[in-house]
Length: 352
Figure (tube, rainbow, N blue to C red):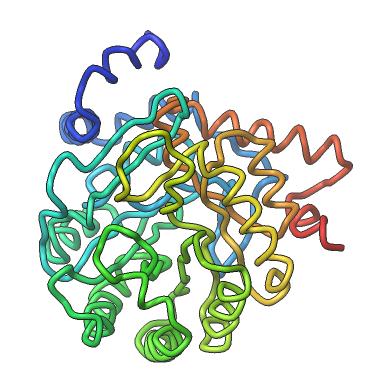
């Protein structure tokens, strides 16, 4: 049975219930048949030297990762790895458990192949998540911990939440992502200030030698985004993810003016934002592109605009688990068509 044949059944379910069903299925199979997903991996994993990169002293077999938000509680790491990802991000999670925002808070925009979500960092908290990660870490591919602050933590104390998580997870991940750009925790994006970023990254580098990456929103002005990224880089940030979901509600045809938009609706916005910021900073740091990527062509364009890695999420919901394989195979073809022997030769080529 193909994913396309299953989609009508899945789409009859509430989006959050459908996600819970997928998580339950993956967890159950992983418990009953530990390592059983490796049987499926041969159909999804693309292993070609042309895509293999050494970044942050870590081996990335391919550049396609899973963005934060899908595996909030780190319960699907082994099953998800069988889909061929080059790296996986768990979270966003917070020090204390929290239920997130009121339901309904997750909406499919099927015709636009997009999602509108107002989840609000719903997660089981650091203790439960640490217990899950300890079952698998260290892992066969890089694992990224996406960390955020609790809703009840005032912004003036927010740095404490990030420091707690940096300390407690420095031996439970290969990289950290600092999430101060979700639109679904009130006033969180106010932390996208040069002062906060400088203080946080300076302290982070005193706590851990693991790479720490800043994730920013695509709704900032280009000048503000460049200044913020440069401040983070000066404070020893190891990379930048561009970008989180968007609150540009002019893109949607419904009356919901809350939550973040992901998927095809933000493809052009995210691509333009990435290109304009990247051309100013790609030589100074590692860039990870996220937002509306659902094909090898879109991934390749961001690589040529300076991305070393890319992330997907919404594309997997609409195109199914083979999307990772398809992007990687497509990237190999595109690189060879342009005469490149290795992906590193294509990174930032549009600016050279």
